[in-house]
Structure formats: structure tokens, C-alpha cells
Image 1 (cartoon, rainbow, N blue to C red):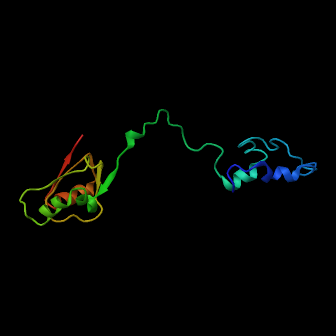
Image 2 (cartoon, rainbow, N blue to C red):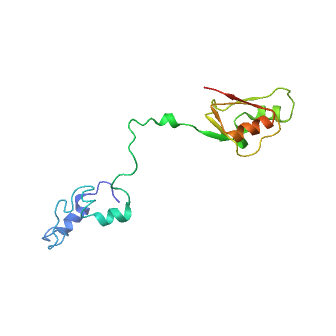
Image 3 (cartoon, rainbow, N blue to C red):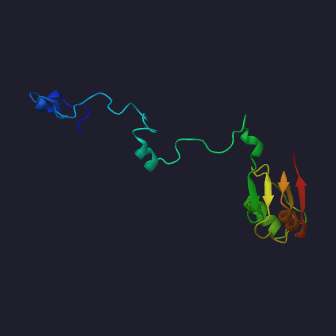
Length: 152
């Protein structure tokens, strides 16, 4: 398509002399016959809105005044992904028992607030820092000889 087509290439030139200019005699080319934009969604365009946009109109649920989403922000991590938080060097150092100390895994620093208990932990003692622990996670960390430290 030519970006700025010359006038001689436009359809208008061909339609000169034809009374209704390609828009029909009966229906006529009027400005906005069915309303502008989303007009008539609950009236004359009801079928279209119900068919292609179900649930667009109306309300659902209860109102919550001054909702603060950060109050409920609590990203979680499972035990099976716990060791992926630390670097590969740290993993090799402690999992291959080359150090007699226990590593500290700070979940909050890595962006996780809660530790959940899915999966298995290696039998290496580990100190885990987080805001929340599930009962199962705490039990499994203690069983591996580690400790759960609550942080603010």
C-alpha cells in the first residue's frame, strides 16, 4: 500500500458522478448510526456483549475500602527449591561436606517471605531465615539438623 497515495490513485476519483458514492441509496452513510464507542452495550448491542464479553456488566463480590495489597504480599518458596537460592559455590561447599559450619539461607533477601514444606531437603544442616514457616517445613528443616530463624 502506498503511504501517501496521490489523489489520482484514490477510490474517490472513480466514484465521481455516482450519486451515493458507494454507500448505497437505501441505508445511507450517516455519521454514527449505532452510537459512538461502546454505546448500547446494555441495549441494542446486548447480543454482541453477552456473546463475546460475558461478565462485562454488573458487580461481583464485596467492596473493600482502602485495599492495601502489600498487606497480603507473601511470596513463598518450597523446601525443594531452597538450595537454589544460594550460589553454586556455596552449594558445592556445604553439600559436599567440605565445611563443618552450617550455611545461612536468607529467604527474605532472595524475595521470599514464607517457606513451605514441599519436597525433600538434603541431610545437611542449614540455617533458614524467613518471616513465616509452615509446620511441615519447620519439621523437615529441624530433622535435617538445621534451624528456622524468624525475621521481621
